[in-house]
Image 1 (cartoon, rainbow, N blue to C red):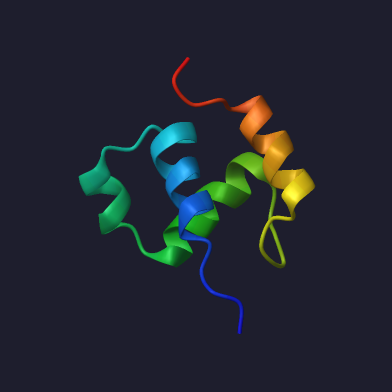
Image 2 (image 1 turned 60 degrees about the vertical axis):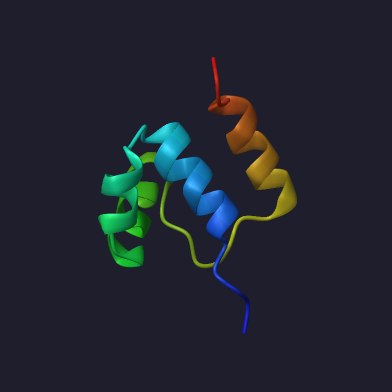
Length: 63
């Protein structure tokens, strides 16, 4: 079983969605997946390295 991609989820929730930590940690994985799908399209599995790089380039942190 593939472990949950916490680093990518946190980058998306805190960086892209700009959720406060309390809001992020209150979300269920299903809610986070729904937000992800609304912005980036529905996924059948975890991001690949190339897709993650493209997302990080499109939504950089700290700018």
